[in-house]
Length: 270
Image (cartoon, rainbow, N blue to C red):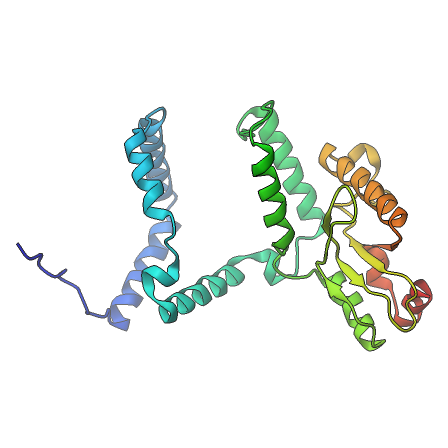
């Protein structure tokens, strides 16, 4: 038996209908009672689903349905490209980190405090806490290989862009997010400068954020989280390993870069 086409297939909503719906939704969300009703409903649904495990057969079917299926296979190359672009624009539009070029120090401190409080109260649960040997050596190597090719963050920070512009003005060839595998703790450096005229040694420039890398001139050590303290130790360890491997490492703090002029940068690079 042939399926009947959907009642609104091919139909387009009028602008008048869109405006009415938009007005209704704005009024709906302004009412705090409506918000509470929805929150309570979602909590009830969440509580009902807690502890319910799906069968192995269901999980297997779900997994198989996703294997090898890409947007290009599902929608075709043209539509897939269009959808990706739409998602990318929407993400940039709604993400304050991209709009403003990054969280400021005060926002980062608030985020860190909220997370620590959540962990302490048990609201935030770290899924792998206390667990060991979760992944095999083969899986860990695959993760490391994939991470080496992944560019993160998606966009360079304002301080990185400033240093990049200085290098462009000086006509110095450089690469960003270059994966350095010559050391034990391999990672993607901020800026890599190969040997060239005026540069006698392979050089790495790190643009360290005052908060995330723990600038002690701004943030006292007793106020830093355990994660940031570990990050500081890793920075020192990587710097030592890079210098032993024949690299020159220049580490610049965020507040230093913001005040930096081209002439001062030339002296640092010399």
